[in-house]
Amino acid sequence: MRRLSFAFGLIALVACRAPPVGTAPPRALVAPPWPHLGGPGADSAAIGPAPRGDVVWRASVGARVDASPLVTADGAVVVVSRAGEVVLLDAARGTARRRRTLTRAGGGAVALWATPALVGDVLVLAAPGLGLVGLDAVTLAERWRGPRRFVAMRSAGAARADGARAWLCAGDHLVAVDAGTGAVVVDHLVGDRCYGAPGLVPGGGVVVASRDGGVTRVDRDGRVRWRAVTSPGADNDSGVTVTSDLVVLGSNDGHVHAFDLTTGARRWEQGRPGWVVSTPASEPGGDTFFVGDDGDGLSALAGATGAERWRARTGGDVASSPLIVGGLVVHGSHDGTLRAWDAATGAARWQVALGAAAFASPARTAAGWVVIATHAGEIVAVR
Image (cartoon, rainbow, N blue to C red; front, side, top):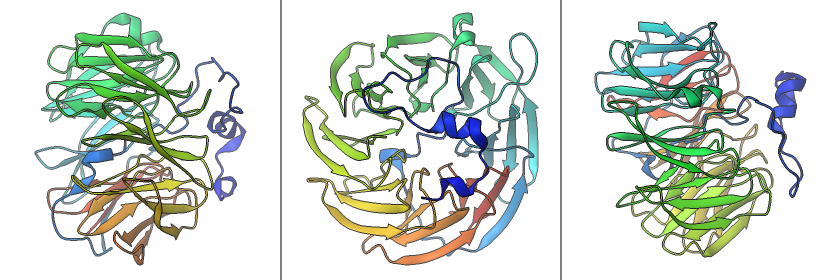
């Protein structure tokens, strides 16, 4: 593992290290340990040719970025930073179109950690001290602010767009927000903090993982369908991937877990050589899940059994959730490298030096380029 090679500092290390299984996590308001979570998940497959690994542009937003970038319909890359800035970069050139700094309810900039959701032309964001906010995805003008009670949330999880709403965790509450009005249409107490993006269930509803070992399926109206457990007290910080019949996620207990979508019964679990905070990725109808781990590797697991099909060694821990495109699996790494592997064999295809750690998951532009953000505040586009 190479986490210590990065100067995260003592506070970051304390925040990122999970308590032993069976102990309660700290209740103080802390930065999300893996705020990008939500990587693409089951919708991580992109259509188009495979990128070649050529850098097209680099742009700096001036502050550390943990959240994954989003790409809008009008060709902008959305980036949120720890300095509280929302930045729109031109996807073709990397130049800044617009910038906006968000402030706390009582004044002062707010740190944006969690990946937002793009719902139509509205960007849905959440953060402690800010609450729930909707911005125009073109102008960054404020459309709405959510109920005031969410300003005091202890943490915010990655958001996931679902039709006209966005699902996310606000502290230990799973909420669904109407992106047009900011109205909270579902508010379910999960039981503990949840950081990973909920997985969308075909036909409606979501599955969310939490820091008490819980995995909960919630219907569109907020009713609980079932609840399962990875390991008692485990920090389930991975985002959730949902297929037609499976719920798959990683956990800080060092396993990838799969549950039956209908019943919540355990299908399989596969041990990894480190924490698993990377969201498993799969192609629609595919039978393989690709997932990174804190054992400096990326693995391909069989969907039916969890058996390892191949494992690739990286130069650092992989919290970044993979993107599947053109037969390649692309992801960031703690060692500051963007890597691409052959999805069928695990053979290395190319790598790009990013210059700083990348927890964030890559996104794809309309031109077929891959964009990723780093802890140095740099956004890199690769074709």
